[in-house]
Image (tube, rainbow, N blue to C red):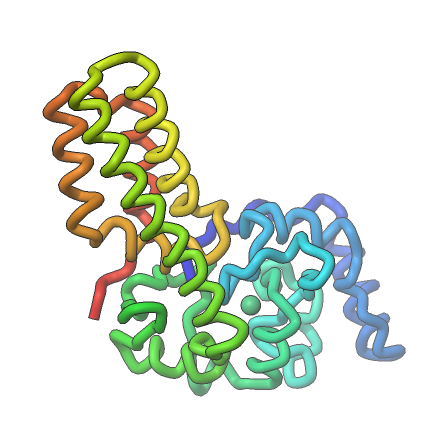
Length: 247
Ligand SMILES: [Zn+2]
């Protein structure tokens, strides 16, 4: 989970429209939130991912659901309230169900900073706070099949790319030519791209990469050779913003 920023409410949700849609839900039970005007800006604000588990929502197998942070059954007046809506995958939405976030708070990534509540151990999240622990349980954020395994698969890819980047650095040290320099920078860019907020499961991947001693040593070596550039530095800083503590 990473910190997300909520955009302004869509113009479509005027005061009158909110009253109209809320009544439509209360009287006829219509899924008034299930419309393009709401789903598109929500999806854009979460980089096309589930706000809770960071799985991609743009693939055919994983379509987006509009999640009501304060559940719609017990809070019908907030059914179309922009601040109460999150983009979620079906699994996270279903796991959370009608959990009462007022009496038993969980992390809201649009309000809370997830890294204050969650840490990472291998490919599993751990709670740093009671709210963090509860969030993991309520959303089922350490489900082996749907989350731990995909995080691990990306982790394996990252491990392989770190090996490749170290090999390319040694080659560069020998050759010192443009081609070997560019081949090295290319693979380091790929590594950092997997850790940007837009990437699937970025909190886990960024944490694993930026705590890998071999990768940190490589950065140091590239800087010493003056082949670490501004673009790489910017990517590194952005990746650093989603890193969780290791526990
Ligand atoms: Zn999810």
